[in-house]
Image 1 (tube, rainbow, N blue to C red):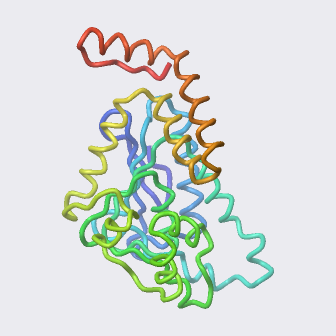
Image 2 (image 1 turned 30 degrees about the vertical axis):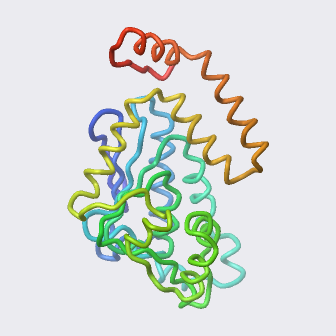
Image 3 (image 1 turned 90 degrees about the vertical axis):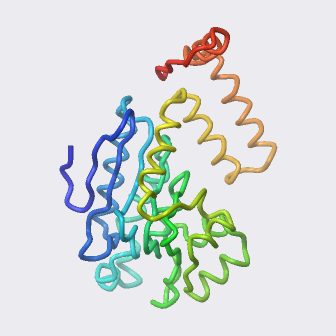
Length: 259
């Protein structure tokens, strides 16, 4: 299945795709090629009905230590305006199926921003999160100032962005950046266990649920509630809803088909 240079993609379990960042020589630094490949594999996963959840990992030692500094250094204030990376970030952001990040080791800069594009982050206790762009004379440029503030609140986000200091996995858990922590050797296993649970649920409802939760960050309460209600009502027309009701009444496991 893998035809990429910077990542590895493979189907694992039932309805789950694992995407592994695979640039160990640069601690998985995110160059344009890496982001293009992630965007491409997510686009393929979106179109493939056999894939219901994607798990993104950097491996056992590091998630991603940041952007590719050599690539950044080649830009100036003019050339950065035509940088292709924003379109790749936008494509990753629009992925409509659940995306789970399994994070071990350094998760910094663009790596932290990539993890925050996931819907759920499972972190090994060795994980370190940070936005150290200030040390290069710039600021986060792929949503770091925005998503980090949503996740951990203004005060901690300010500390991390202004100082460039890292936080550990327990602090990330306490402040809501990650969903849970685990022993480092179990991070991927736990992320894929969550993925398997989600993959067993009705795909149309899962997709609508993700969309509705994200809507809460993008609109006011009234607009969010209206969107939720529309999604709720629309799901009554699905075969999976009828299957879910029948399974409940018949006291059996539901078999959801995404219809």
